[in-house]
Image 1 (tube, rainbow, N blue to C red):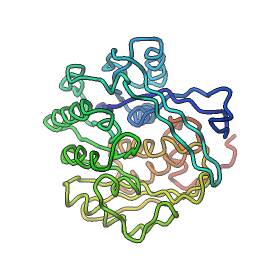
Image 2 (image 1 turned 180 degrees about the vertical axis):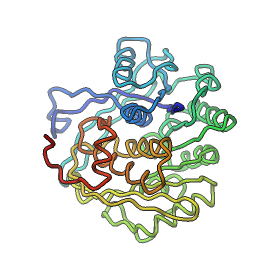
Image 3 (image 1 turned 135 degrees about the horizontal axis):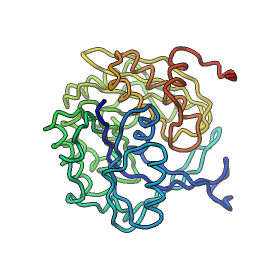
Length: 340
């Protein structure tokens, strides 16, 4: 089976233990994470060959990150070394009506200062059938926006399927800048993935009769949003994860995909949240897995949604579940009973 290439930043994640607030913390739990890296971790867990492409600092923190990737079976053959530092993000987990908070400390990170000469895309894409990036990567610097475009041009010329998770981050760029950059990139994308907010923030396409802050989602209107993305930009598949936030601790979770002038929606899950970070990335990985395994659309969506549901019960960014566990949930075993 051909490889999946992902491209982006992996960061050190520092979190107060449990549900402590930053101001209470006397220590931090250490994890690693980043949108595209999270996708590669999930795929490696499903025995899909994957390569994560990034730039790490040539110091102990860079090598520790490299070792973490290798530990979980993620391909590290196209990681380059250089630059100033590893990016960091601080994560305070919310509970009940108190939302989670993220503070970025990623300015001047090695990947954000990468240059075109760091990556030989024709070599990287040898034996690859899929390329994935997110809207976070081009948001990190103008250089990375250009490098991402270069990667898309080469991937498209080599007949490689390209997916993009819009992943709008207001702390990294403005809606105007996101629209300008992502409009250039989206025309190369075959599979566009977004959540209930991203399409509105990046492309100013709003779902009617929906208010994410109040937990009101009109699923039918999101089907029209997906159709408009297809008609405006030509993406073959448009997938949306739809989260109804009852509180920081309890969410409803479903997804839909637009393809061939039809929409397919997965079953909806009620999740008691352990850690929601990485939920969207695990959905992306499940979607890619379904395509790589030649599943039909319905089965692909159920697998991806079940995988992302399970991720939100696991601490850290990475979705440490097996294909068997995902399939059990996708096939209806949602009781959570002890397996022995």
